Amino acid sequence: MPKHFIDLQLFGEEGMAETGDLANSTAEAPTSDGVATETEGQQAAPAEDEWDTLIKGKYKDQFGKAVSDAVNKRFKNQKNLQGQIDAIDPLVRAIAQQYGVNADNNGNIPIDVLMDKFMNDNALYEKEAFERGMSVEDLKQLKALERENAQLKRETQKTAEQEEWDALMQQGEELKQMYPMFDMDSEMLNPEFGKTLAFFKNSNLYSDPVRRAYELVHRDEIMSGAMQYAVQQTQQKISNSIQSGMARPQENGTSQKAAGAPTALDPSKLSREQIEDIKKRAARGERITF
Image 1 (tube, rainbow, N blue to C red):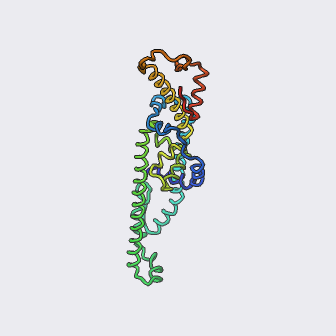
Image 2: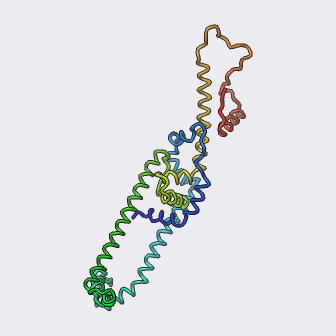
Image 3: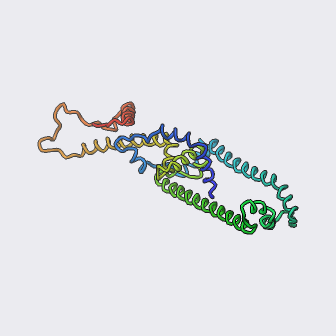
């Protein structure tokens, strides 16, 4: 089972309600004339070298802490697992001694031999077999069948979880086409992303939980980029409109503009204050015309 899938299950258990409130309170950002839609497919993302610059510069401390936390968590899990093994070791050795199973040359108890001895101990089944009106052999076969079914169920669950994770990874690869900086491993270090992804995945309301989670968690960054894109598009449209007007052929008898008619603005002659004012108006969704 993928490690991140285990983390995702934990996120789902711990953060379902919290992320639900976040999702309900944050609707998809309204668009103006399709700006957000265009941004998703057309907005350029920083290149890989910019990512390296960020994690080695501006976000060096945050990235280092995220990596350190992930490493510490992994070692903590390993330490807890070793603690559990050490705790049950005396019990295993006591049972092995009872069944006459000796340790090997390395001092380890051969678990498969001990398991075979334990499962074939009729004394373990006699009382239950009597109470259920069965023979010991029939009960042993029934128990063996129950164990096989349980094992099959666990394996089936692991397969389903692997398939789910593979589907999420595929969504992640597709999301890179829209947001090249997206990285599943890096995002899974962020508890907020993990909880949000678990919420969307478990809700079964959306076919693209990875994109939903990423856009919700990084909504401020994405909207900032969308606004910047909208301003750039508006500036481009203004420039194109002006250029188009300048290039339009004159009609017969109109070699010169009528007296008093307003002339088109020349972008190169706009003051800094005028440019900033146009940007703010465009960011508010105002349609700029000349």
